[in-house]
Length: 288
Ligand SMILES: Nc1ncnc2c1ncn2[C@@H]1O[C@H](COP(=O)(O)OP(=O)(O)OP(=O)(O)O)[C@@H](O)[C@H]1O
Ligand SMILES: [Mg+2]
Image (cartoon, rainbow, N blue to C red):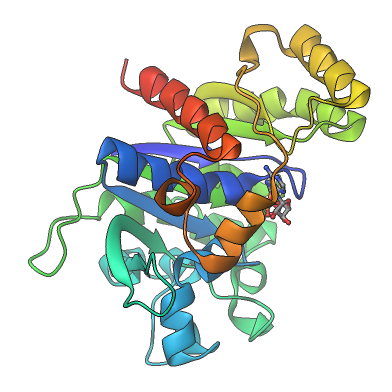
């Protein structure tokens, strides 16, 4: 299982949209078995991938019946196999939702019960010592069981926009990290601090963390501004720039709203082609 962190300390750079659609392309077009992890208490990835389950069972479903979520793994890593759920969706309006080769370890949406999310569990230094390494332990326990064939090719982790100790701990479980950035100066400047964060993780926790690079998202190359910013990125990042920009398109918003990744019902949309190029780069680098 190759684990890839989709990370940026800045909010709204397309991390969740990227996790969702990269998972879709890997499953649909490459036939890969994909586990996604929602490491963000906003739970946007969970809401999209488990949309059908939520509609069936109600908004509160992850708080019922002792359901296990990402947050719980920091206390009980051995529950990891129970935390894994299948993403299901139907490709036709009103059809029955089916499994698609994409699984998710969900996060509990914090607007429902804020007291039971990660934000509550762990952000102080002392509590961090207790929870450090627990996710790594959990991921190492994912195994084949009779009920589910957990034999994943890829694990994609969608991060919250932070660079606290928890984020570094989660980063330390990854083999690779990839960074989406939007086309504005604040985002571009924010990237400079990132390599330091990655170096820290490498030095302190995970010497083998590989940096796939930085790719532009929500990009409008028809504007002079975005073009100029793209050139700035190229100059400052050099070979860390992944030259496969993801264009602005409302197709990605619809996809998240309906809970269906672009690869399944927007196969020839221009943004799907953009994501396809990104995935091709990811597969090439991670399988080399
Ligand atoms: N290529 C795109 N074109 C148009 N809108 C996009 C695109 N990618 C993402 N968006 C929109 O931009 C917003 C932020 O995207 P997303 O939620 O994926 O970012 P994020 O980095 O996960 O945010 P956060 O840091 O809050 O977790 C969302 O409204 C999303 O629908
Ligand atoms: Mg997000």
